[in-house]
Each structure stands twice: as structure tokens, then as C-alpha cells.
Length: 125
Image 1 (cartoon, one colour):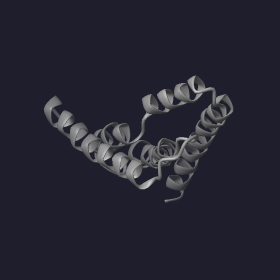
Image 2 (cartoon, rainbow, N blue to C red):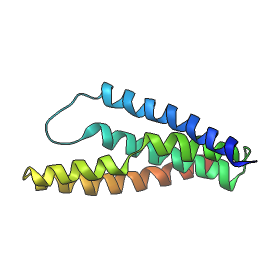
Image 3 (spheres, one colour):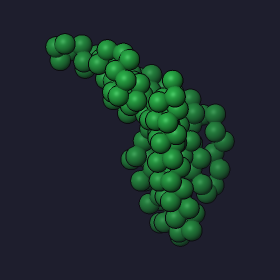
Image 4 (tube, rainbow, N blue to C red):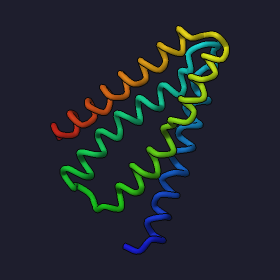
């Protein structure tokens, strides 16, 4: 496959991933303190990438271009490490260090567990 179709697959997936992320941010009430919307998209994205990895890479159940569309494009745009980082930094800057610590630690733990869970579920299929 030439590069242009790969870029188009990533761009298409990215457009839908960005819209899905935005939809989650609109549906989760904005509260002072814990950044729930980013936490939710990152945990869901970790679950989905675990599923996708096993289905697309280990089982090779779909053609390789699906990886470009779903993993690189959709999940790359859906999840967000940069927003996670700026929200954690903002909490620290606002002297909410305990909330920042809970956010960082829980994000790491939940995302890793979600990825493992996704991989485990996909292996059962």
C-alpha cells in the first residue's frame, strides 16, 4: 500500500477519534478538581487498544490498514497524553497536589489494567 492511502486511513480514523473524544468531553459534566473526561477517554482508549492489538496484530484478523485506521488514527486522536499532562500540571499549579497525585496514579493503573483487560478479552474471542 502506498503512503497516501495510509495517510488517508490515519486521517479518517483521527477525525472520528477526535469527534468521539469531544463527544465524551461534552457529555461528562465539568467539575472543579478531578479531570473525569480525560480520565474516561484514556481508560476506554487503553481498553480498546488492548482489544485492537490482539485482534489486529496477534490474530491478524483484519488487513494491516485497519491498524492505521483504528489504532493510529482513531485511538491516537481519541486518547490524549498531552491533555492528561497539562491537567496534572494545572492541578499542581493550583496547589491541588493530592488530587493531581490521585489523577496521575489512578490514570496509570486504570489504563494499564484496561489495556490488559482488552487484550485478555480479545484473546477469548
